[in-house]
Image 1 (cartoon, one colour):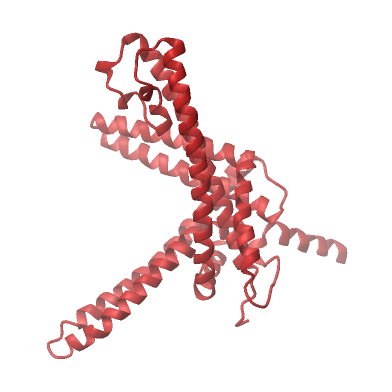
Image 2 (spheres, rainbow, N blue to C red; image 1 turned 30 degrees about the vertical axis):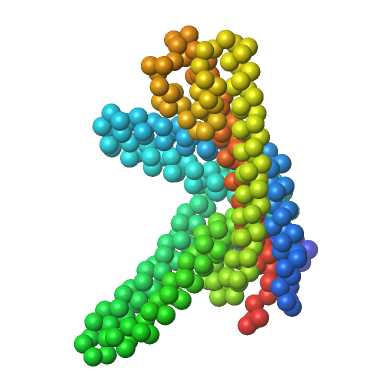
Length: 329
């Protein structure tokens, strides 16, 4: 009986790690280890399952958004709103599914199947929204308090003196709030849920990070931004160089009488609506359409690569901060 209970406890820790840190590290923050973990997020480009989920999500969202644009052009506003909402839905839950797969890798958990990741994302994605809503309410309360101070500054005699105190207070508070939102709330809310935390546990973890680790998170987010930017730049170079050679060779080998840039429009996320049909020979339309479709696939791949690195990076940052022991107990 004791052995069975111990096995259940180990399973609970393995598959719901948001309930308990994997490690309880004391002492000064290990910057070197944290930086290595962030740099290691580049390995995410080799995660085929997460890449497949993101590609499918971006493709589905792109199709829904293009349909919404077409509906808007026809004046069908209700349809356009619904299709735009569908695009946001697909991107949000697709990103959460990819985040779950990447968190499995970061934690060393057995990787789940793609279908399971999508179903799990549909079941836990609302926790991210709840946490963001709670933090948003706290931010709204802070804004209301600052607005009240500014209203008090309208008093005839004490107003200017109070205003002299409100100005530096507002600058510092708003600046720190924006830093906390960009370094902690925005990037780390998702990983708390992907690691297994409930809505309330996610709120508590985010608040703990805001209280103890804003500086750590900000520095690591800067490092992750550099890594993501390098991956994006490398991917962009491959796409541009390969796309230019492809377009030049296509004009020469197929005899299509169009500028090479026309065949590259799909590489920038464009389509036939971005091409002036009046200056395109009729026999070239089929080639341009095929190039736009193929270029759209390459554009999605180029967008997915840095997104994968970013999602894996925020998972690593979350784990690096979560493993630190609260010095206040």
